[in-house]
Image (cartoon, rainbow, N blue to C red; front, side, top):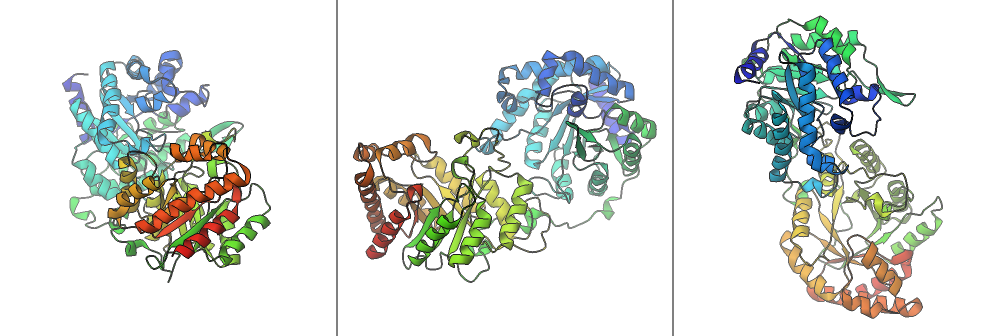
Length: 625
């Protein structure tokens, strides 16, 4: 498109009449027969006829702006399907197919979604890599002939800002749209008004919202945006919530209802309106009949805009001292830190319904005077009893504090919020936030890892709840009182990466640290020196070995555990009583080195539930103290 045509787009956005966009691409491809598990963007290459059919249906419905079928066509996502090498080809083809249907009289917008983090490693993506990924996709769309970009369904403003900068480099207008959470918050905690202020600095062609809970919820967002910015507004709502019927997701909002809400949106000042998930050609037909040729409604004057609006970021300052987010309870298992060695012991929930054996073990540990009992959550991604309910029962019956482990693997963000509020209701106050071993580690066929957040994101969620809000900023009508813990792996030869993660975890709200098992004195001494600047309680992990077979399994198959060669040699050929004695001797050597190094606490992990080994270590630690 020529600069003159791009300018025409900006003029229509600024002055009207309103521009009609198209509807959902993925949901429409699905309705037209594409399998739900298909890589929809790959259809640009393997089923161009189907993609072109959807575009043509939207053109016939009255759409003036046609989006490409490239929402998730970035290299990182395509890599998970073995299609990374086709990134440019898929995006170029998507642009060409949209142009074939749109012709020269309509605008073609390159659809670009956020870079979805597929794993904990992806969660560490830096700005430079994100820029590279966006630039690769967006340059290919420009090469294919798009007129502008639809940067849509972003949750994080920081990611959207990076994509906007790339659009500016490529000299194409950009429509900047977020998918807001309940209450009008972005994924990084900004409210609608703050989003408008941030995005206005980059001067997109329009800002707005798409996807979400449906047109009624987005109408509320739009009215706030209209009062917060003078930029043109765009909106592409879903057609309500989907219902699963006979194997398909059916969106229930009728075209007439969708069009009626569209009229209200235009009256609120929208310059570009289309549809997202579930909004098909029939919805766009009704929408075009209702609003085509209409000028955007008058916007509130700048003087009517709010001068101060509360946000999650304003209300949840980054913690700088343990006292800012520590529980309000009078004491916890760290109350005597620095006065004597603190000892916690880990137990694994049962694989079935019988809790009598683990309750007996917990009573033994409580009688031995442990400061807290750790209760793991589905260790190694294998099915066990839910640890939160068990932790509450165990704490009630023994009177000993229980540190419940919480993984990011097993629940999405909705489930995490709900479960953690329930945990607080049950009286749990101490939690260890961990990412969790991926399901691939286990043999639970058919299960999948969630990982909406990693351990740092989980800590941020918990810290937000301690401040009385969800991760998205919504009020929870009270505050949780969680004491938050984090894990640390001291075993890699180069600790720089682990130390950076630890710094993030402490900044996110962690107030104590438990390490992976340490098996030699040199590793312990190196770890103690490395974590000293953080000034946080660190409990050294001790897991006694019991045999050569046990040692080799841990070294070769368990994430985060590495045994020194000297230790493996000492365990070689050992089993039975001889293996347990050798393993206990090695563990006591680490404990003695810890005493000399001034270690303040230990996190004991008895293998195979052998609590007797933990009791021997507890006795030795108390005697040395």
